[in-house]
Length: 289
Image 1: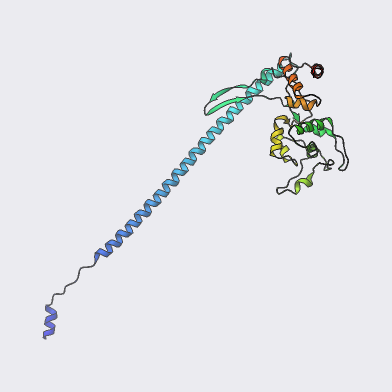
Image 2: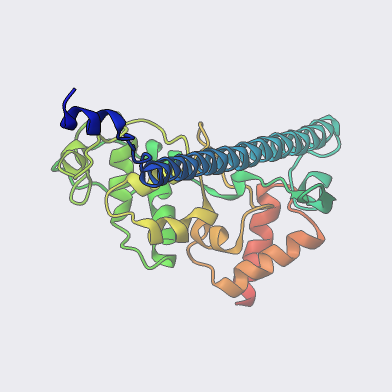
């Protein structure tokens, strides 16, 4: 054995220990990121679940409140039905007036989450827009004299500072044909060119709000007219025992507001028993000026 071999054989082979500090740092970093991601994920899920729970609670609360409101509304309807049925059975009362039980408002009543009240209104105390269907249907270029119903509605229009010729557009909306009332009527052509086109109904109105669809009747016009109009399915006369001062003035164009107020004050003391009774009081009011 030579000398070099002896040296190698007798030498102790020393191995350096592995560098574990770097690998431990890497493992710690991965673990920290994993924990952060887990916390973020759990937080996101928790927030989402909490938000969903709040939404579900609010939805359930709204459903409960809506159900209660619906039942309260049905209760008021039943109250109104009983009052009207009782009024119908009272044979001694041949007229409807504001001194009757049905005309008294339901006293304000506290209920869970709010208050409850209601009243019955005689829509025959308003101008029935569907009465305008009785005004005839002239040809498109034919000038026609307005009917009495049209004149009454024109008076109502003037009280709202609206042009009286708007009555023709309403009559065109109601009549069955497509002929335009001269000169200010409006049939399909006036509505089909709008950004959101539609056709004239050519049928009786089912709601007073339908008036806002008629040409030149904007929101302000409808808001002014709304307290005085109705859309009853058949022709109806005005009930002078429930009509407002404004409606009485449109019904009787020759009277002043002061005289109309006198007619209302008279019926509060003694309701009008008949048309002749009303006309007699009217003659006295006109005579006094």
